[in-house]
Image (tube, rainbow, N blue to C red; front, top):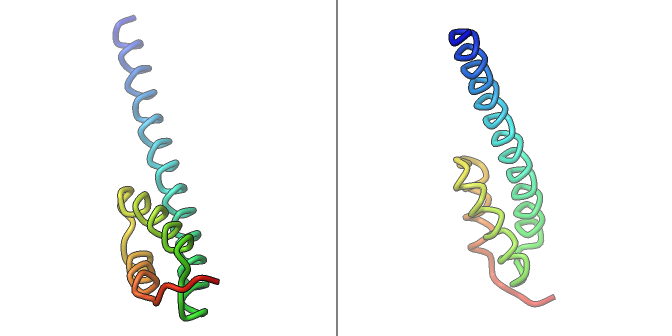
Amino acid sequence: LSSVLESHIKNHMIHTKEENKAIKNGLLAILHDRLYQACTHYIEKGYIDLPGLKNIEYLYKSYHALGGNGTGTELYTRAKALPIRDD
C-alpha cells in the first residue's frame, strides 16, 4: 500500500509540475503577444503617451520575470525610447 501511495503522489507531483509549466508558458505567450501588439502600435505612431509607456512597462516586468526575452525585450526597448507625447 505504501508503494502504491508513493507512486500516486509522485505521479501527481509530475502532473502538477507539467501543468504549472504549461500555464507559465501560456501566460508568457499572452504577455508576449500583448507586448508585441502594444509596442508595434507605438513604434508605428513614432511616439508613445505616458499611459502607454506605463502599460508596456507593466507588461514587460511580468514578461521578463517569467523568463521572456528576445523579441519582447527588443520591442520594449525600442518603444520605451520613443518620444513621449500627450494625445
